[in-house]
Image 1 (spheres, one colour):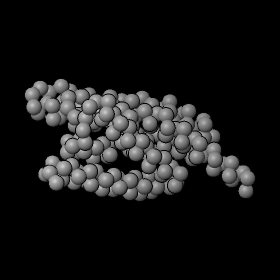
Image 2 (spheres, one colour; image 1 turned 180 degrees about the horizontal axis):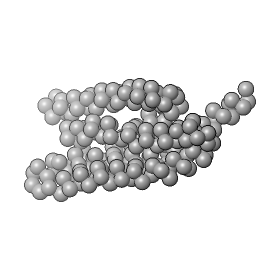
Image 3 (cartoon, rainbow, N blue to C red; image 1 turned 180 degrees about the vertical axis):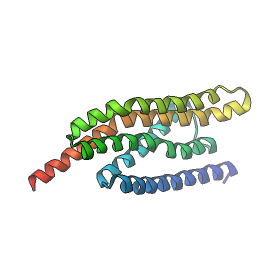
Length: 182
């Protein structure tokens, strides 16, 4: 086996290990603060969707799976979950504290947090995208790193603004229907 293959394999193992650590931390933190398994499951869906989408973008950008892209994925795991948690927390707040219906709470929460979610994605893109334009050999190496982070954050924002509010609203509606049928 080539040494390069060994490094990439170890990097993939580290990504998988970090992925499961991130999932465990998300479960713990979200459940402790929101006290709801439904609210806990939604950010868990956002992480793999953003990361699988990032791997799909590798094909479009002509990237390979290497140590730099895997390092970027490890960093991205910690970043992509934040957007979904912000949205879930905002919706849960309006449902529990303001007594709103899931649809009303989702609408109100998205009015409040859409701007910050988009701003987070733009700020991180503003930090990482200029690195992609660095010249020379070092610039070529860090181009993959920078664009991997940027793509994962863009996908995270898209998921947080579309899939996450729909999921929160749907899970609450299903819970109310189930409670009404009992």
